[in-house]
Image (cartoon, rainbow, N blue to C red):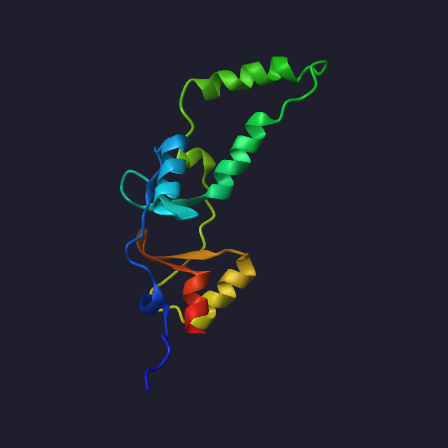
Length: 146
């Protein structure tokens, strides 16, 4: 008889795709689609975890881009000024990511991972050692072992 996995290291995926913070939004969307994943951790130039980005973040941003206020509003003068800064550089994963990362250590029990996901309403937990990504656990991983 085999015992169910006891902790994160027993069920985590170690082949984690991390997105560099400097990745532009179009490359980001292409990578998520090609890899058939809904989100990924974002890393800085040292490879340290700094955030998480998802398809929802991309869609939310695109939705904001297509919202057009009525012509009679004075929004356009303000928007033109604000857009000058954005137009100067491409939008990146750093711009879209959530800096709030739900993470746990390799020894975190599976039941605690489930509790963390429920409490924070997330579908993935990044497993870390210090600032380094060691793996990822998704809701599907937990469902498979409970």
